Image (cartoon, rainbow over all chains, first blue to last red; front, side, top):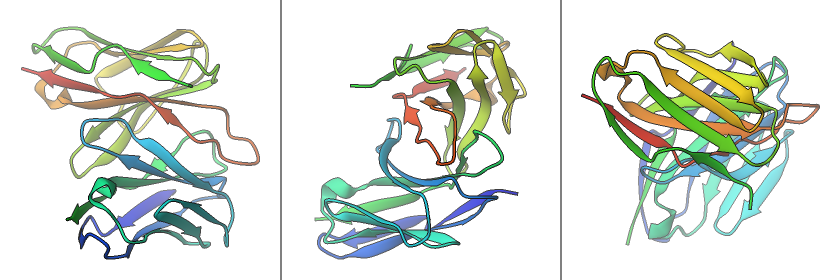
Amino acid sequence: EDQVTQSPEALRLQEGESSSLNCSYTVSGLRGLFWYRQDPGKGPEFLFTLYSAGEEKEKERLKATLTKKESFLHITAPKPEDSATYLCAVQGNTGNQFYFGTGTSLTVIP
Amino acid sequence: DVKVTQSSRYLVKRTGEKVFLECVQDMDHENMFWYRQDPGLGLRLIYFSYDVKMKEKGDIPEGYSVSREKKERFSLILESASTNQTSMYLCASSSPVGTSGRRQYFGPGTRLTVL
């Protein structure tokens, strides 16, 4: 069964304190792994798509990496505006469905 | 700028009422999805549609139905609203998966409260 697990559930960082969020997955024939950012009361906002092990994508202070079993979202020198919930989802070869993790709630303290 | 819009940001209904949530996308996507999001449970798929008039049940379809008469519009219907359907409802659309996955585009969400 396709499954996504994110850790930690919540993370508090001081401004400038770098860290990583984890997304572990099991899926039949990975077609894509997706990272989204979600602010309270809003819809998820797309960040990255990763397609194969070894791939990396960067955007400002965020860098996403992918292995055959997990993905990491690295946050370098975070700022308070990076505070949000980060969601991970996968899509496999069994159809058009997406499987989501429960998210990591990130708080960056000034 | 591509968009997924939802008919209401906030909605308050009474138990037993019939509730319609509308979603419209302007990207000519074949696939559309309805999720509900609750604290600690993440996004749970209610229904999705891969073509006009086509639908498939997701993980939690009980108490819900959907309608897709036009490609750009996907409606979620709560036949008789109950308090346990109080939640954030999110609509999304995407192109069909091919050899590579296709990202979803999400709407802003509808916060539904059933009293």
